[in-house]
Length: 184
Image 1 (cartoon, rainbow, N blue to C red):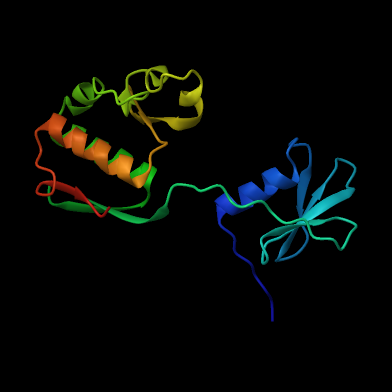
Image 2 (cartoon, rainbow, N blue to C red):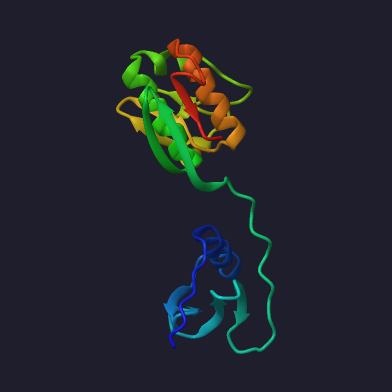
């Protein structure tokens, strides 16, 4: 019977980064459970065992333990209820984006008001991605286009996501928990 392995994308990215910190190797699929990391001349450097979620040296039985995965934002199923419509999303980033879009659609001008709100070192929306964060360069990694003319910050915990959506409701004059809510 054939064996197929599944691994979360964040774990696979973490394993690849650990096995190839210089980002110089190529990846080849060996079978349903193993990837081979190789040089340009097809010399195997290491393997990734998908079933065990670990890195294995290419020519050695000695196991290199994979580093503990970086704690990431929770992914799963999140529900947004906005103005009587329910929408399922599968990440906090998408929940925030869909919520902000729904508020702007129902109450135009919400994004403009929300762009004036700045918590410590960041805004949640801005017309220019560089205005999202005080630290230069963060917008390249954590800024994403929301709608034409607007960008939003994507690096938010569940608590921050909810807080930003509550603040957006205040800006829109919408009752949190009545006209607008999330499953968080």
